[in-house]
Image 1 (cartoon, helix red, strand yellow):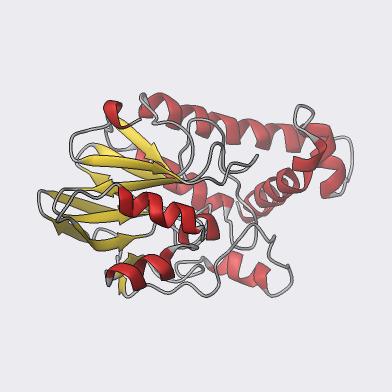
Image 2 (cartoon, one colour):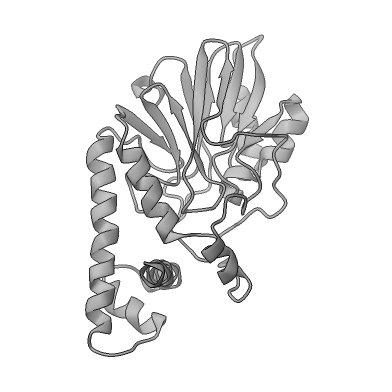
Length: 272
């Protein structure tokens, strides 16, 4: 993939393929000399070795940046930080930035178990709009909650490190209570208001037509709303039944994750 990337950027693919991670987690190495590592990935020794092997002689890691606190993005953070001494930057802990409605759900609704890293805590916070710079590069943090409360995207000029908020291969899972559909849609709108030439996601290939992809994701979610309301027009139904009626084209093993998306839509519809 490196040959297709902007100058000054390297890619390392973590060996954690799955139905929820595509080929694996994308780790990005930004800059030259003193570099930043974006999303170190899962806690796999082979991936730590792969990241370090991509450094040129004399290079070192000066910053570790995390888009959000899911274990497939943060699991390697402790080992990489210990190995390099680099500080860790993120918006905050996993549920920092959570809206009141989602927080209230958390008191009655168990987390889905999609790998929230409850132990994650950055050394330094990247608040919305904050900028972080290194030798020859600068990124701007954009708080994009929805997939997870502490999710940020990183604007590198007109290129966006989009984490799990915008991916080309799949839609994002929005799983209450840590996921929030209303916040997710607001974040899509916010990203749509800016011009991007390319998006570099946490999983899958680069998104080369960001405006079209953002419009597709928005239309997809609005379409799910229509399906849910149409199903409920026939009478009350529980979330499992709604999911089976709406998600007719996915493997049965993915239905529990799809049901969480349905719940997220219902919460958002109720709020609105």
